Every structure is written in structure tokens, then in C-alpha cells.
Image (cartoon, rainbow over all chains, first blue to last red):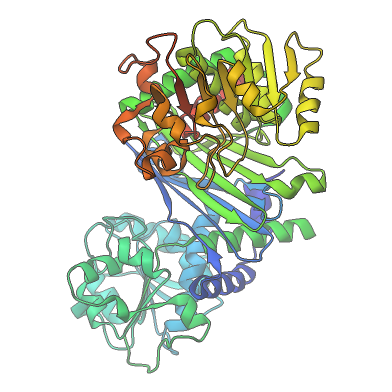
Amino acid sequence: MDILDLATIRRHLDIDAVRQDCERNFDEYSKGNSVVPPVGYLAFPDGECHIKYGFIKGDPYFVVKIAAGFYRNVDKGLKPSTGMMLICSTETGYPLAVLNDEGHLTDMRTAIAGSIAAKFLAPAGIRRIGIVGAGIQARLQLECLRSITDCRRVLVWNRTLANAEGLVRSLSDSNLDAQVAEDLEHLVRSSNLIVTTTPAKEPLICADWVQAGTHITAVGADAPGKQELDEALMEKADICVVDSASQCIDHGETHTAIANGLIDASKLVELGDVIGGRATGRETPEQVSIADLTGVAVQDIAIATSVYERWRQA
Amino acid sequence: MDILDLATIRRHLDIDAVRQDCERNFDEYSKGNSVVPPVGYLAFPDGECHIKYGFIKGDPYFVVKIAAGFYRNVDKGLKPSTGMMLICSTETGYPLAVLNDEGHLTDMRTAIAGSIAAKFLAPAGIRRIGIVGAGIQARLQLECLRSITDCRRVLVWNRTLANAEGLVRSLSDSNLDAQVAEDLEHLVRSSNLIVTTTPAKEPLICADWVQAGTHITAVGADAPGKQELDEALMEKADICVVDSASQCIDHGETHTAIANGLIDASKLVELGDVIGGRATGRETPEQVSIADLTGVAVQDIAIATSVYERWRQA
């Protein structure tokens, strides 16, 4: 069994290659060619741990991913999110490699999924990218969007202003023209690609603010009780795309909209079906589209496998 | 994150210490002081993988255990069962250690649970130990019973006679008086402590064969479809002990007996309740007792934690 540390993992992580593998795996997932049991979940006084696992039928590997979030870690000088991924053989069951990624691969595959949603759903002319939240995920979403769009104008909003300022400052040596938004409404009204990356438990974005021709990707609602978008927005949207219909109905942005009878599950389209051409994404520049991403094990499988195979080849 | 290989794990594995920790964890489990979600399960063309995870409330560690069984591995010169255990902090979520035990700790904790069942349920005077099956688990059950009973007379039965002979031969330099049973009925009739360790999918042991004053521990039925004991035996038994009532009703020996209406769930007693003194085990030498062990994450937690702490102290 091989052990790959974070530095090694970073060296063998190619965002565009992983994006391609993630698209393929979303497609396989929506076609029913994957085995992805319900997410394992452990709750602790100060945090939580998700265990995601599964495989694509016919592939040589299965992956078990452990991702923990402990929000008090920052008080101890530690990263709040951590984890690791394990690659095993589907032919012998043997563990082949531990990817001790310290949560980085989970952060990256989430950001890469955001860029896939933008690639398939955002309008052709992205004028401005609005980023809601100013943590690691906000930065990574911007990084992964680079090869999807030429747009370099970015507005950042965060509940704590200083953190938004910090993210903008840290982007000063990138070639992004990033600014702090005066308020969230302004960000929403003036951006046509919006990515929400917060752990909010109450809706931040009002449906009324969202202009025609906007795409919003929401990645924050990865567990029950989390919500970033006004549920009326799911009703207003022309296109509601989800990474996993079953998960999003259970605990994504979609959950409240369906529970309150604002939309019907038949309105949901899986991202893999859009990628595979079995469902229609955006059809006109004026449509409002939403991508509700809760995180599916097939993304973990894609990124772990990509890094592992590149490391083996090197 | 530390990596412990199998040789290191073996050096820090103390059977009696783990038995004590397993007893404590069975007790906590049955008192409701543990968090043990349903077992994660992946099925492959040639094998299966179980993911067991959880923690004892208030403890500093949680454990995620991956155990795979791929029966065609023997054709490739590989062990059929493999796996690893991961120890993480319940305070920060950080992975602390990978125990690359190659499935050994799962084999050991199963055998140790068998010895706990014998300690609490077997009659006082064990005349002969009957072992059904001749694989790794059969050998380990005998090893773990050594400090529980002075009985050294052993009968071994296996569907493939050569394997039974092989196990008996390999025990020749132990101080056990081990012999191959002429047939399974003879083994059952002449042993008062019986341990079944096979992957049988149809009952092997007839209820009629079992004499008064016998204790039987069955460890084979760890997944749906497996069964070693005639379900009528659960009805005949005076005491039906289970490691986990919910698991055993779902897929243990107990499953068929309850599904066929032979016994009621109220007949089941959890091993942790016997250990903790909240339920009665054997009361007379004549009683027939059964222990149906399907394997619970609290055993994995006990053995992984014990090895890890002994390694850290050394």
C-alpha cells in the first residue's frame, strides 16, 4: 500500500484532467453505472465527518473518502476541514494507496464540479463572476473557473467584511480584477455567474435580486439544515440542475423548495444527464439556471483515481 | 498521520487487553453510549467490502474500518480477506493513524468476540471444543479461547476434509489435543463448546444434534444470505445472545428464525447487556445457549484503539 502526502498529491493534480474525469463520472452516475451508497455520517460535539464511497462499474478501483469539518479547529491553529482518500482494487479488495490529502482533494473536486456546472449552464457571455463566501472554497472556485471562462471581473461578498477584503487582497497578484461587493444584492444584480460557497443555514440570496440570464451554482448545502438560496429561486429558475437528485431532495437547496411544494421533483435535471446529452441545459441567454451541488462520491472517485494514476505513471 | 504496518500491529496487539476493551465497548454499545451507523456495503463481481465506523461517546478517537473479502484471491496467491483501519480524533477530525492490518485486526476482533461469548455463556466444565470450519478464523478462535478455558481437547470439522486435516496438523506443535471429527453430527454431539466459522449459506448444524449444556457461537453470518445454524436451534436454545439485536435481526443467524416466526425478537439478549449485568446469561449447566455474532464497529474501535495506544506508549 502506497502513501501519498499532500505535496505529492498537489504535484500530480491536473485540474483539467480531473474535470474531464469528473464529467465522465457524473455521466456514469446519472446513467446508473455507478455504485454509490448513501453517505455515511458521524456527528460530534464540535464537528462532523462524511464517509463517501463507491465505484464506477467496470473500473479497476473503488474509493473510500473521509472528510471531516470541525469548525473550532481554527481556534487551535488547525484547518477546519481535513480528510483522506483510500484507493482499493475492485478485483482483489486490496488497499492500493492512501491519499493523505488533508481535505484538499475534497475542496478541489467541489470547485471542479462548480466549473463543470458553469461550463454546461452559464450563459455564453459571462460579464462578472460573483463569489459569495471568502473561504478556501471561494478561492478554489475562482481558480477552477479560469479555464472555463475568459471573464476576469470578480465581486466578492462575505458576511464578515474583513474576510472578503482578505480574499480580494490575496487575489491581487492573480490576473483577476477582484473587488469587494458593496452588498450582496449588488453582487447578485450585477453578476451573471454566481457561486455560493458558505455554510449558511438560512437563505442569503433573494429570488427578486436575480436577473434574467444568470447562472448560480450553490455548493454550501452539503448536509441537512444548510441553505444558501431563497427557495423561491428554485421556482423562478428555468433550469434546476442537481448533482444527485436523491441527495438534493434529501438535503440540498432543492430540499426546502420541494418540501414547501414550490417545485416538483420532475423539474430537477441531473448534471450527468446534461453532460451526457440526455437532458437539456440552458437553451436561451435569458434563462435563469441553478446548479445545486451536494457532492457525490463519483467526484471523489474521479479525483483520487486521476491523482493516483498520474503518480504511478510518473 | 502515522502508518502502522502489520508487523508493528502484531507487536502491539495484546489479546487479553483487547478482550477487556471489547467487553467495555459491547457494554457501552448496549447501553446506547456509542454511535455506530449501519454498515456500509459494496458488492463486486468477485467479492464484497464492509465499511464499519463509529465511536464511543466521550472517547478521543473514532475509527473507520474497511474489510474486504474476495474469494477468488486464493487463485491469485493472495489472502481472500484484507482491509485497514483508520483512527481519527473526535476533537479535530484529523486522521491520526492508518493501521494497515491487511484484515488481521478484523480476524482477531472476531475471534476475541468469540472468546468473550464463551467466557460469559459457556458451561463451567468445557469437555471438548468443536470447531466448524478450518480457515484462519477457526485457528484464531482456538488461540483466543486459550485464556478463557483450560480445555485443550478439540474436534475440527470442515466441508473439505483435507482442510480440516491441515488445521489439525498445523496445531500439532501447540499443546492442543486436536483431531478431525468423523462427521459434523459427532462433533456437535460430543462437544459442549462449539464455534462455527464458515461462510455457509445453508444451515450446517441440526437442532436435534445439540445436547443439553452446550454453548454455540456462530460468527459466519456477517452478511445477508449467510446461515450456519438450523433456525430451529434458535427456538430450542434457552438463551439467544446477539452482539447487536438490530444487525442480527437483519442478517444474522437470528434473521431466519425471526422471519419464520420461530422466535420473537424479545427472546434476544445483547452480549453487552450480559457483560454489563443488565441481562442474565447462562443460569444452569443444562441450558443450551447460542451467541450470534455479526460483527459490530465497537469491536473495531476497541482493537484499533488498543493497538494504537500501546504503540504510542512504546
